[in-house]
Amino acid sequence: MDELVKAGFAKAGVATAERHLFVCIGPDCCDSRNGEELWEFIKKRVKETGLRAMRTKAACFRICAGGPWLVVYPDGTWYGAVTPARFERILQQHLLGGEPVREWLAAQTALTPCADRPPK
View 1: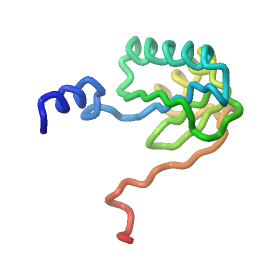
View 2 (view 1 turned 60 degrees about the vertical axis):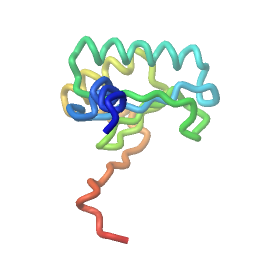
View 3 (view 1 turned 120 degrees about the vertical axis):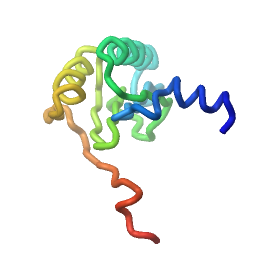
View 4 (view 1 turned 120 degrees about the horizontal axis):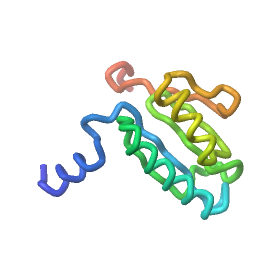
């Protein structure tokens, strides 16, 4: 593997991540300023808590309403209308505490590890 790619994997935390946080920051599901504010808060809090999670922001999950959206993998929990205050509760209760915030859960689509899937 190319050294730059190895460095990128290390920076992203691929080898040590337990979760992957995907954030849709608009512009169609929400005001992009709110999405960017949420993204900056998530980055800060993940670093501060030492949460073993990768984070990825996107401009569109194709829902186009009710955002900003947060999807937590591998458990596939979908949260809409996420604000910094809501993320703090999601962080404490779900990501650190292991219990999803049920009243804000829009969907749950857990991924199955590739090894557990039958061949097509």
